[in-house]
Image 1 (cartoon, rainbow, N blue to C red):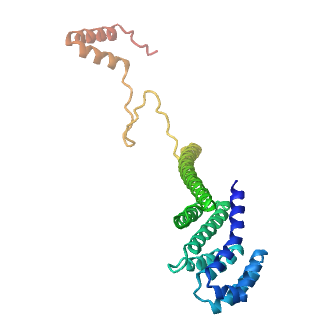
Image 2 (cartoon, one colour):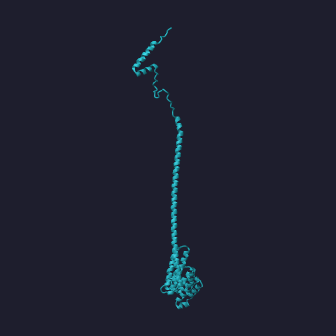
Image 3 (cartoon, rainbow, N blue to C red):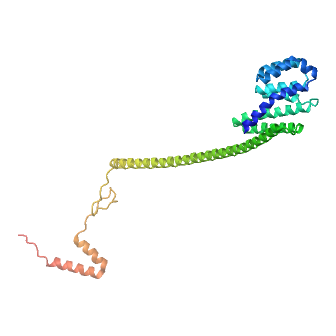
Amino acid sequence: MRRLGLAVALLLCVSWADRARADLPEWLRKHNGDVDSGNEALNKGDAKGALEAYNRAARALPDAPGLSLDRGIAQLKQGDYAKAREALLAATVPNASSDVRADAYHNLALSFYREADGLAGENKHADAQKLFREAVDAAKRSLHLRPSDPNTAWNLELSARRMREEEQKKKEEDEQKEKDKQKQDDQQNQDQKDQDQQKQDDQQNQDQKDQDQQKQGDQQNQKQDDQQKPEQDKDKPEQQEPKPDQPQDQPEDQAPEQALPREAEQALDSLENNEENFERYRARQRANRERRTPEKDW
């Protein structure tokens, strides 16, 4: 249906050249051959030839609103939207007839619509939405001048619909961008957490490795100390075990005491017990000497 509306709008452009020509004074419509040539070329679909003819006519009619309308239509057919809008706006001057102005705004709406449709196809929804809004405004101006034009009313409805569609697409696009941004931020945060965790794990592994190396080094040092200890013991002078019954701390210049006779030891024991026992011991000793057999001298 949209294509049908555009086709109808394009067919109407053919008749606008005749309207523009009718807006000119009678003597100009009869005697300006360049305008006639341009209208003929435009009716045949030769927009380039028509524009060349209109440009020649503009030398004689520089301020004619109808000629500006014709030039704008020819440039619109060539797809030169910027220059077409410039010429069409020149046809909306207050001294132009209402029909010429209505046609100018109608074609302005078409220029905005076509450019917006191209941008929408490139997914440039924000720019397309703005141009569809311009198309709506131009169509409203045309209907204000000529309310009974069904083609302009259709273009207005179509432009408003497309404007809402692009607005919705722009909203969805913004939401998707926000989701993508949030997803990207979440991924970056997760990557940062993974990096921090990896650093922490690496640090723990390094600490454990250092502890193992320290423990291994301590064991090696202990082993070396154990190996060196017997060698140090060999270098020390041997200590002789003390002999039984021999004082260990006896001075070298003091001779060992002579062992006392058995009788003397007994006498000392008796003396230590008491003097009576000692006297008895002495008496027994004397008796033993008296009973001793005299030695023979033969």
